[in-house]
Image 1: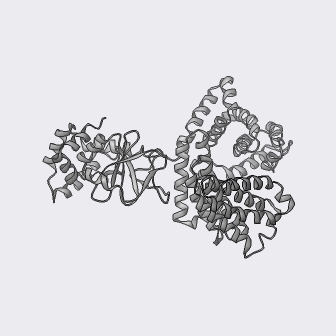
Image 2: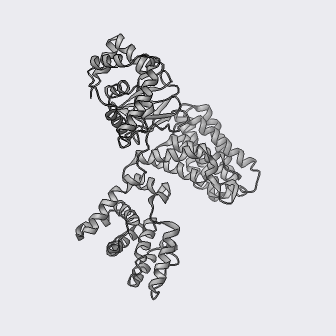
Image 3: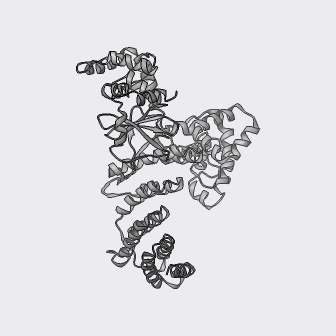
Length: 508
């Protein structure tokens, strides 16, 4: 659809006023913007086209889709164009009461909801003649509420991952407006399920092509985890042999488990060969029965690993399993949005970080992992958000210094140089007044070298950014740190220190 109706509204004041007053699509409110600064998680552009009297805003995205955001922190796509969105808000003036409806609910339930909402409006305003006038003037056909609800639901389901809205300052995501989409594992496993079906159909060429592709191989093994069949043993052996090329992966352990569950003792030499691939694999597959073991022993070993690490329900898998596989398949935005919502959950409720049996202590490793995941995705704002909270929760001086050092690096790479300077100042404070003995030998270990290196790298960034005074001040601090390092730790830093000093001298 085009935006023909939008142009008509802009040209005809009477039509614009009807749309604004009775159907809450007010073009004049576009000038006021949204209630807060927002951006798309995907980085795509947003343009404000209208607003409503509750503080909600209608945005136009790069492909023409209309994203509605309310003032309470929820957002969703409601049309593939402004005209389609207009047809919706005019045809369903209480459309926000319909966001949880589905065509599967049936005509009776949908009509009851629509009638209740519209009767509430009619108690105060007339809408029927005005709706007919607007439809005729804008060229909209008269569609049934059931059809419009179906269109609305289809549009809302397109919101993720491409149109997720973030608070621009805090980086947290708006809630879903309307239904949640399928769980992440469904789109991630789709290709693996198709490949598993191909393997079962036979054809050694397909077996070889698939097994030689590490990403397809991993996803197919995950598909086999949740769709187990007696006739899969030979293809599982095949995938297991090839997965050894990736050394110790979760999927290699999974393949060994799936083979072992069949209880064929003839597989023991193969499993032993896989286990002895390298040191990491030997550790990862420890406890495996030796050749000569019984079928029951093999099966018991596989069952115990299966119950502790895998299972048959994809919903039980850690979300990192699916975000890693999504990223490997190029589903970057899908992985990013899932990780953002994971981080949002921790920010809103840190109880999920409590150690089992020790409610007073926090296991903060998930935050560090999220920061690394976001960095690998190239999303430095979200990486900073996760690392900042991670740093704030550290208890020992060593952990505080290490976390702040990483935070400073991310801030420097994101161009947030003043913040990086502050983070390194916090690192130096931890070194000077640690409060415990965890940093007793920092001058002799890699942490000390890394901290000194980051001081010099940030000094170079400050000089390149035309901030000579700050660069000179930080250079002084860097040189002082270098002077405290042991000869062995300082050895790898001196060349960077000399280059940095020369660059600062150039700035005058």
